[in-house]
Length: 230
Image (cartoon, rainbow, N blue to C red):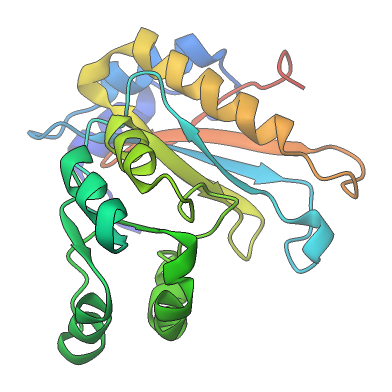
């Protein structure tokens, strides 16, 4: 795979054989980021579980202390007072069947997170085949199906992220921007990893955290040591 000169220069500063302490890893990420925009920093955590088994699923949500640095667009399915509360809390879009039809007929997906009150799940369920594959289906476990939709909106806007396993048993999550600096990225990392470790399924056997890599949007990956956390 062809890599540009900037990427190659960044890669030379990183020892691929070393698992860096988290703070050192984020200092490297910030030092080697070379794009002209504020790159997103992502975490990729491979777990020793099998996502094909229901009792080995790892999924949840956590509020990062410094947020993610990105503006999150929130769609809320609610009615009456709950709809009004969602709007006041800063929801970008609020509706009922009108939003279902907009998504179905116009293939509209100008939102990043979907929140719903429990009484609206019968309506939202019609969108399962559209929202599910995109990872947008609200769920109680992620705190996006809740009677308190206003609070859910506030938490998402404050930096709440959802983590879940993909088919290869890896969790991919944004933990901030390069402009945050190593200290804030490290705080967000500790919060996310703490939640992932706490969510360890009882059925998981052997080594739980197999590997942990962080990378900026355009930069090379840096291996992070999690030995002190597990």
